[in-house]
Image (cartoon, rainbow, N blue to C red):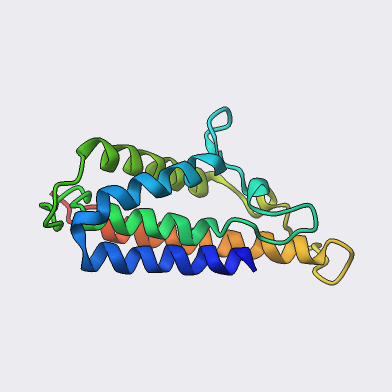
Length: 160
């Protein structure tokens, strides 16, 4: 039940950031600690195991969290070729820190394999660990989707 509330919260914060740009600074400040809890500095990657409980259920919807941060970065003018879209002043260091984490997530997801999510062609989604594997698959798909979205939104795709 708590994960659904987090998902709604992150979706709602995206909408608030779009409609009330002056709040982007506060929204990013509120989201970054949650994101940093899922980041493993030692391995320079997200720790998806921190996003599921011992029963295999998702406790932190990291794709929704990343999407909220990426949307705030985009709205704050954090794309490499844009001017600020936000009417309010957003602290540049927050955008820079957020972009840095998002960029590290992209670098990580580009190098990881399905096995990094404890999945492979032999994974049994019906067995004792089926819930865990289903959760890991959902997180893997969501992470790929949101990081691709981030790249499209916040990266200058025009050559030259």
